[in-house]
Image 1 (spheres, helix red, strand yellow):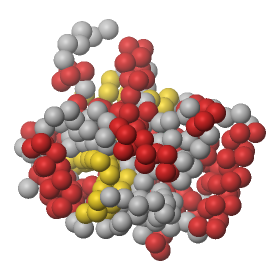
Image 2: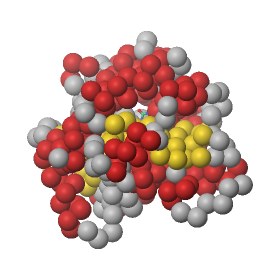
Image 3: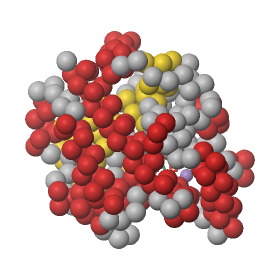
Length: 309
Ligand code: PSU
Ligand code: MN
């Protein structure tokens, strides 16, 4: 077991990401749970590679994050990305799972909570994902609320997302974010996006019209100081690429029923629901999901570039 005394020895930051951070060049963190557990194979690897290319096309350096053989890695090479996409039984690691995974020498994909934590530790200010975890609809019975929310109340990072997955209780999730003090900024929208859908129907208090405006909010957060918290940049999937709302509502109702009748609980709930939607919308939910993530990654590269300028 290596002796690990500080964060720079614990985190393995790729040379490319390290150099970009040292030179104050734009970097965008990407999570790996969406690749390992959120998208079907083999499409997942294609999407993971495409997302990194989109970050580069936007003038920033991609830093996909995962834990491999007990080492938290910030920036993966091609073989490591393929390992995340292809290794069967790869664990799903939230923030609380990081220490046990490191100690055990285990590998795992990082959720939003674990990715945001590691990215912030490495000094990365902007992170792109699909949809955040949040409060599940059966919360009153299960108390299932994603650890994403609590962690985002504690780290200073911008998370560009298409809202929270529509399998969740969206109003309850927005309420929790308010209680936890996590800022929410609609990007060119006054309504919180609905992940597969362009709108959840819920209002947002603040709207930004450009990446430069979002970067201004990040600078204001930095200047205000105080206890860190995230900023959620809620970026809707383009209307032309959203899932048909009627199909969405119908299949989602079935998915929630199947989840309950099959007794799926805990960490397995989110992957189960996402997979059910893919299989029962003939792949349409997958296309909407990928479209949403693409848009988020492009925007994140723009924000990181404006912030570094
Ligand atoms: N968004 C997606 N696909 C995903 C997830 C989000 O489009 O697979 C993942 C994220 O990693 C998020 C996690 O952090 O689901 C939340 O899982 P849970 O609800 O178990 O906290
Ligand atoms: Mn959960």
